[in-house]
Length: 352
Ligand SMILES: [Zn+2]
Ligand SMILES: [Zn+2]
Image (tube, rainbow, N blue to C red; front, top):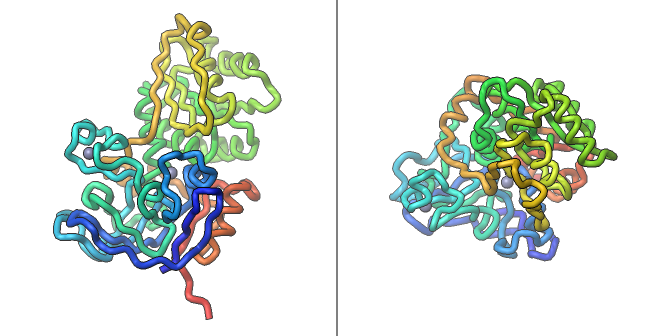
């Protein structure tokens, strides 16, 4: 089968690989019907994820059809349409029992990182019962595509932010994760959502889809100016909750500066560099920071919101490419060609 493999030194190639086989009774093999490229794939390509293994098939955001299920898979069988969580987890360890599946003692972010991922015709998925969310009949593959990763991240970030009805929520970054965060934050009934991004077209898109009420472009502004714009939108207090989904050079500092005292600051961004925590300057602000990788689990309810039309991620899809042309898809995604947000990879096409 065809698969997109990276070498750990910044190079990717579409290669022939053997079809995956079941290795454990709890594994399933999924035929990928839609996949996509995530910014984390670019981080791996650039060598910014130390534990990522070279010569591995990239990709961890996808939906598909179960082709084969091991004897230990109880809830799914061949033919089922499924969305797949980006994380692999056992469901039974100390962390899994508490819903902290990102830190599962026998899992975590494996697919497309330490084991072969989904940018291929088929993929082996460990702990299939935990990994899968069933796609209901009325939901298309593309409607469900982002559930297991960026939508899960938006959902998780909004939940961690403890948004109360009427509160002012600031979301830094209006890219794919920023937009799913705003969508999920909206469902909590905030008084306003403040979107911050240096890309004007991304801000406009957030406003046009009703995801943001206040737009702030920090480009060519210092952080004092950004902070005062947020203050003037929030009765001079600062944001009640901040979700940092950008991972830029100064967005961590922006996040804690625009937060009001006693706010929750959620860092769902992935940074390529260390960030400074200047405790003397923030002393007395009594902030709560929540950081890390999404706990992508328990997503049946989120799938229900998609089915009910309350969450719609179609605005994220900019372009579609068959697996044959995935190298072009990487180029367009990385360069953000024509404002490209997310690309959809459709199955390999036999060409005469
Ligand atoms: Zn991802
Ligand atoms: Zn576990």
